[in-house]
Image (cartoon, rainbow, N blue to C red):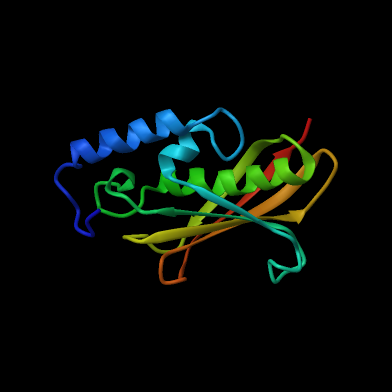
Length: 154
């Protein structure tokens, strides 16, 4: 993985990455194909361990050339997907399956390289509707994006 904006992605590396995601996935939480493709690792923290009053789903992944936009930074769609996944996996863990019914993102700074961290948490938990937040940090611990979302439970 380079920190420069490559003209082309390393084809062999991309194929190997895709094949690994394809071979290692199961269509279930944490192991579904897109999570494997992004390279997500999951950790669930109880309220006291999360250093807050709410449970947290923390996910991490390495910035790769495959996730770059034409300007060389982490693509906003990949950022949005990772943040949505951090919230959705927490909803599932705490309340069961749910669906995003709206989401707003604020991009604070580009992510150029290294390990990316997202933390999803509830802002207000309800029986059928919950309000959530996800924050994303770059490898230096600087806030890169904030997402808020409304989730619907069946």
